[in-house]
Length: 244
Image (cartoon, rainbow, N blue to C red):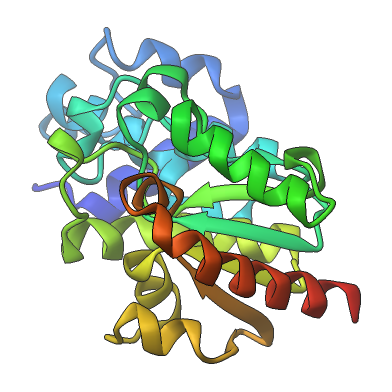
C-alpha cells in the first residue's frame, strides 16, 4: 500500500502535536514507523525532506515575526536555499508604520544575515536620517530571503516561491506606507511590469497600503546623479507617512 504525501504530512502533524518539536529533530537521523503497517514505513530521505519543510507549509499560521522566522528560516523550497550562507529574514520595528522592501540580499547581507548592510546599507541609513527616521523606526526586508549567485537578478520562480513569506511579514507588521527600493522589488510587490520612472511617478497601493518607489541604494552608489530624484521620492514617502 503506497503512502501519499498527504498521509505523511498528517502523520507528522499528529506527532508534532503529541510530542512537540523534539521528535522532528530526531527524524533527520532515525527511521520512524508512525504505527503504520510495515509496508507503509517512510524512508529517511522522504521523512527528512518533509520535516525540513513542514514548518514552512504552516507559516501562514504564524502570529509574530519571531514565530514566522522559526518556521521559514531553514526553507529549501528553491535552489537558493542550498547556496546561501545565511537566511536574510528582515530587521527593524515589528510594529512599524513604514516598511522598506528591496529585491534580494547581496554578498554582505548573505554573510551577516541582515538586509541592507555594507555601503548600500550605510547610504540607506543616511537617506532615512535625512527624513528624520532611523532603521529602528521602520522594518526592512527583501522580496527574496536568500542571495542569488553573483548578485544576479531574482528569477521569476524564485520570487514566486519566496513572496508569500514577505506577504506574511507585511500582514504581521501592518505598515501604512511601503517604500520599494528598485524596479524589481516594486514590480514584484505590485505585480506589474513597469519601468522605474513610471513606478516612481505614481503612488500605488498593495492591499490598501500606500506604495512609493525609488532607486535601490546600490544603484545610487553607481549613479550618484540619481540622488536628487531619490530625494524627491523619499520626501513623498515621508509626507504620506506624516499624514497618517
